[in-house]
Length: 206
Image: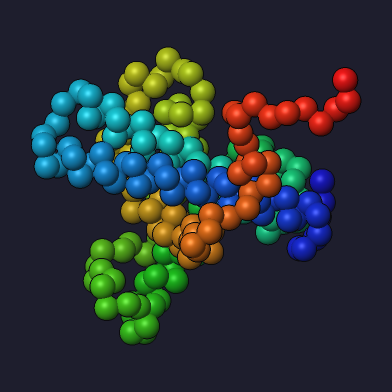
């Protein structure tokens, strides 16, 4: 479905985007807490399990959020289509392009002196995002969280974290200022924040 900025579909889509990013943010904070516990108390299977699960959820929600953001940029909720490339190939192109833009902007800010004082040295950031990053991001999302697949038992989340965490974190951090901030009152997310398990008196006549 095609839509325009500010119309009813866009408003509803933004609610879904906000919800998805808050889920991503929750998962990241849980991951950071579990990771800190692993560092302070040492490794064991239970803490590895908790840390893995939190990071897998973080990856899943971040990936879904990014594709939702792409849909809003395009003004179209329909799957990505191309006469030659498949949908997942187009998704990879968009994800890689977003990551590269964020990386390039970060490097330029460091080089021209506009980066914050706490920013890393330019040597911490390569000039380009690895070509396989988006494909591995999608594969991890599908295998570690999205689908129950036998490949999960042999998929190294540790290896993904070591190679690509910098890029997924940059994508996450780049979106926090717009989608992650919560004022004193929690945002109204429509039926999402209206959910209740309390028994309510029926308004229908008997």
